[in-house]
Length: 336
Image (tube, rainbow, N blue to C red):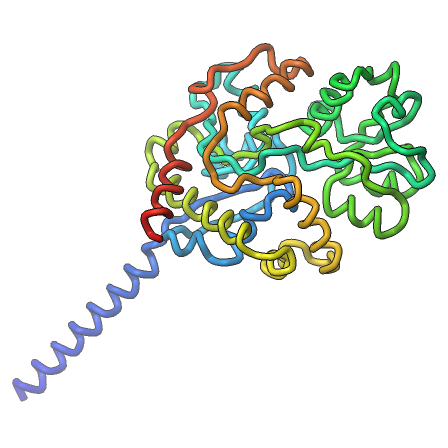
């Protein structure tokens, strides 16, 4: 009888230990509330990282959402609805310039070029920048980075909006439909809208605002300075996962990438997705590593100052925090 009781006790203890181990393992993942500013094919390596489970491999459980707006992304961080956000860093610069007590810092970079292309309506003469004189161009809303990049590019080519070129800003969701319905001679569109317009025979791409605008810290990962200080391990794991997504993206074909991220683009035909990806890859829209470029940060600030969105350039140490991207790259090298 004693042996039987002992056996039962040992069995129960073993089960208890196994259950505790299982619970510990299941609870080992650290939860991270993460938002992206909009849904954009320019963020492809991020969707690859999500689809391929790279965040889970790093021990993170991601609660992912789309904020639909730079101001909303920033608000999500400041109100602590989100811990990490992918956003246009300009909104974090504005907050820093205004003297917020807990600044939002960029710790990794995803895209390095503007994601829009200038599309001409069918029937327009062969494209030159001077040929835009007297024409109407549809763009995104004032204050949004693609709009500011476009105005900067116009100035680079000696053109003044309102005087030489009629620039018509529209809200992002209505821009491509308005062009499809017949408004404007040209439109500054992003993918997958560019490829859809071309497939429909409505327009043709004549210039890349990404190439014209040069290398910029266009979309970056950021968090509150206090969160980065308190959770450097989470920031590092997050950056590692993004880098894995970048490496996988660089190593695979556009068709393979489209298959990997198609769940993020429900309703978009595969041929359109593949063509759009090819266009972005050709101009190297996203970085091949998550290291923040200070030069690209200053280049973006130049455009913001030009557009009077920022009073003056902010010191790099006020907006960027280095080390996480560099460590992600070094760690990957050591694992080879």
